[in-house]
Image 1 (cartoon, rainbow, N blue to C red):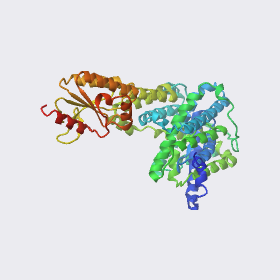
Image 2: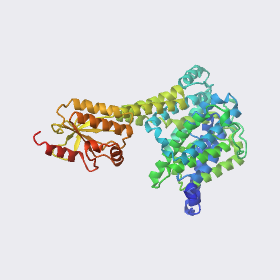
Image 3: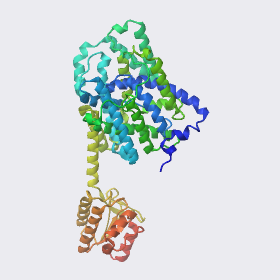
Image 4: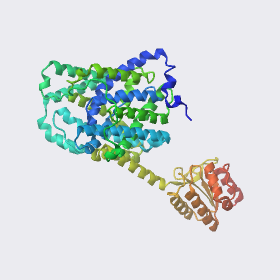
Length: 560
């Protein structure tokens, strides 16, 4: 049974919290609040819910995440990709009803919380491995372009379209004649401030400065009458706690959306956590982060929010501002609570184009051109998978696009695994080492002896392919009297694989070809012995290396 302090880490670190950490955590918490305030409001508009719901997400999510996380720097809140996924999917489920839209978004967060809890109980933290870095590269680039397509109409002050990336661009092209020049200048100016701020003041809450400047301009000039859409009145006070107004059985399509949000959210969270843990020399518990992410989403669901995750941008701000512990998240939540209680009137004159500029600026960094070029050089297959993810997101949307990429990646992986390479080995000079003769044709072969190495596990869906490769290579060498099968690269052999090896041994015996097994791992040895392989080919020993068996053959056949 795990100890309570392992399940709820705050019980462990809070009583021992060093007072000297307070200054760093306080500065980080206030800086983080200043950063996430405009960013979370901008992302909430992507999700299709009122902008201030983004503040609720950061307030409730950060507070619960801090209690359960093992990371000292990760900050949770709405993220761009998850926000767009929520907005694009819930649009078809809500039927245009804003209240139902918000309720479904909250229900999705609650469902993600349940999935996280189940994954925590079943120790499924390795689920993250189903989405590779290659898929993420393409997915993030596609998501960034899709998000930009939703925000560009706001930048030009025109009505936006619906549908996929290309439909939105086509609609925007038709609306450019109606561009509101005041809105466009306002948005481009804000975008320029954000980009220049990144260059000259990295890690500072530049978006907050842009927000304050915009509010002051609208409040004290006549710009409010120039076609600027404003955020409007934000309810003062903390969010009302309560379960979502709809149930899972009331809405079809929430579960697949929640599963996709869970996978993306956990990947983003654990990636950020590992990055900062490595940088600062401490360890995190990936399984515990399932629980912390689940509790954060449960809190946001009860506080009228939607799905949250650990984002790299807000986590970087937290870390660079001097965060020493999760206390910075608690202080960030307190700062946001004070803003909601006392200062919401200051936000009513915030132009929506500023939020659009913040979103566009935030997602620009998701398009990693250099990394895509590097991936293309390293692996054509993985680059193809990344491009499938990118194209899938642009054509089918984020949810279907990422699922398509995962399915295609798994299919390609299974295809590759089902047709593994069987390498023929030759001796490297006079040494005791052997390697692939295709890569090293200078290697020496021994007449009458063939040495083969299957370069994968031998399991039910590739066993026949491996047998066909072995037989084909034996047919090409008619003089073979002994076959050494090197299993050092076969970490797993299942029942079907062992049955194939038994059949192979019997078939070789009929052809008067001896079969020897070299370097089998313990589990492989045990299964082959249980299947009766030793009755056919003699004793199977972990100490029998390829060189030992080859030398034995040469000594017994000195005239070959």
